[in-house]
Length: 517
Image (tube, rainbow, N blue to C red; front, top):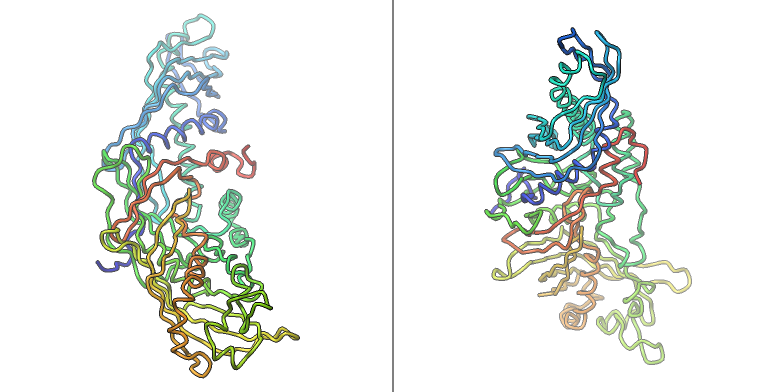
């Protein structure tokens, strides 16, 4: 296979069960907004035996949640919703031939809504109402004084209720979902992604105020002292790109969305390679709400841009947990340490006795991860770096560079999954150390030290990836017990999920600033 620029790094499929969950969730979450949305309805003229009647200021009432919500999928891009058994009413002011207030009731109504799933030119999701109908399974009633206008209003009541409900649904879709999600950047920082950041991003764009600090502000974790402090998910300058790359496709198997999946510096792109061509399994797993094929382009773009900003550069010194005790040239029973770096590098120990040491590791080129099934050798990881050794002055604490070596590592990787992160564990396959300071670090010493240093180096590499690689799923989703299968150049994730109700309700509320509890 070869890299192809511009194709998706992530392919996702919502199964029919997943589509139904999302549709039910959104419908129930937006019921309150449908009732409270401030839309001024245009006066409606109704012809009656008593003359023309003008219906003004219709107020929508929905009196309980739907009994059920069913969805069906219609290729190429339509989702059909049946919202069953909702009790709808409307209070309306009448004028014209009579001045009065009427109440229209429609118990046990069914709403049939067809929604087309599209994308904008910028790669954001976009929904369009194709049709909206209100089906009445029980007689519609009108409460008003008995007169010659009532029968005429009763005949028009179903159409009036349908127009009232559907206009509000369309307003919510256009003004609360499309308009706001169209403003939401598809490139989201790996670090500090929370509800407040997402909401502030939309508010700032709605106000045409670019507050980039809201997105960039994160608790900065020092990488100077502790190797264990490295956390790839807190790389505050790296953004994950959720841009939809092709038309959303609906089929009997589900709703399929392709997204870019690139990790890059501030979302600017520039990765010098692309994803390989891949496909989801032809048949959907009906037991899982979501299937995702994640190309190894996703972690490799993270590795590439992480390397360019020095994200993997690491310092080890006497204060570093796990490693600090060995960071010296000389050790003995009296010192309380039976093993130290000086045992690996006798020439360094001889030339610089009883000295404390520090080491800085930096990548020489981007680490590489290649997904392969176990039958093809499993997941492969390779890393090429440089280790620089410094002497620490006991009095001034100043450091003096004394030696350098290159390190070339190949390893096998096993994966554990959490709700939003793939956590790898590395088992070293081969280690090659080469001296860059032959007067201090003899090549024979490095060759002999590989076996003894293997555990230390394996621990160091695992600490580099300790906090894991983010699963390219939007913060609106929370995965439930995902299962993973390794394919050729991709991971297949199969999982159920929950939607963030509080965040969705806030994003679709009339006042974005009002926090939803």
